[in-house]
Length: 583
Image 1 (cartoon, rainbow, N blue to C red):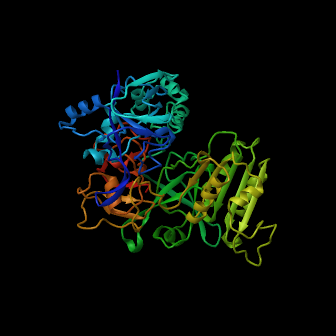
Image 2: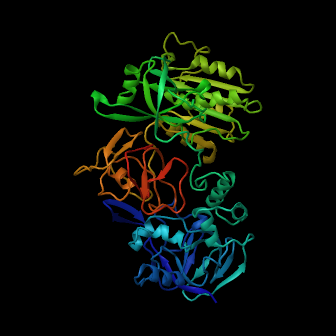
């Protein structure tokens, strides 16, 4: 009979790790006596990172004594204390390849239901002093699992574990974990997992995404799966036109300098341009959205004049018949193929990717039975590019709602003709227009505009899954558990500079030589204070998946499941040539 061997609890604490402070409750210690199992955790226990851990479906973590013995053999070390894997219950029995999602167990006075495998996390590597541990738990198919508390009650060491019900789909913890993280995702088994009613919502969304992307490379359950890029690295394109769109926006019209001609990009895509640096100092790479859909084999890249080398060069140094090195179009900010209403929300130069989407809707006649809301904000008419073009496109749609807001209109700007209101766009603007919360929202603009809208949209009931954003410049970091420090502009790493391949961070405007003092591109980016996203740091979770614009990398260790075409997992990659990254 399976039984409880140890009950372990721990509270969040700050731990020093690689020069950073991590807030974590991974240190669990055995306790004596009986403990109450509550809906969210055991008495005396808590989670340090509620976004990645905890909640109703991740209340109690379970790990097996047999797995302790297994890891002692693999790691060639003694594991002398229970709770080392961050588990609340160390149990005899309940193997991952026997326990099924949805199984219910009576332990002492409480009733539990198996809700999901363990979430991969770098902090178990910190606790075990083994950075590879998140990947090892997955690749060796010994993840452990979470209980949801169905009935609260007291539990203690020695309590028998009695199964009283089996999950409907009879799919084990080990198989569930493997279906998401390991290569190959057989559709029939993924469907079984997605149909298990007791599976936690996050896992169900991942399996639904896998099912919607069957046959495509990459892992849609962990990150966006994108079509193959049209070409690797950079291609010389000819400037066939330079158009001044407004006081501060200039468009470059780019076509193939030699066959083949340019294929239509996905609406909302961006390209990276390789441009001369200031005063002839090498080159810089900059990302810009495509503001059309490649009609006639021509990409239109529209750029606002700013203080950076890239925009200044485009506005003053590029002329018709020049040749510019350009990456293939890419990006995950693209139109969803459903029938829901569409709300385009943009401000300033954020109009460019959603303008491409508007072109796509008109060209495909894809909005004949859909309401389309076009909401754009600008300072005034002098800084409102593409106004007549947008009006022409909107006239071609049968169910359109347009709203233009100027924050500082000029005297010559006419209310009712050029703009509809003198204010900044907010969630209340959307409510006044009657846009439904069930619509798909596509948002691009300055960071303060986007952050305010995201908060406001969620406040009026818009689901996160219905909000799609494009950020100009660096995206917000995901650094779970790291206690925030001072935010610094990207810079070369401190100390002696490396002499390896050049690593270019296109969104951050930084290009620096690689140093073998770093184990991965992720570590190198962190040393440069380039905003990054990660969770496992060992090639499992794909949180760090980044567009590799150009160049080659080598994996060490190899990722559990390869990323999508043209992407790289920076947590376990090192450059072997000069590389350009969308960071």
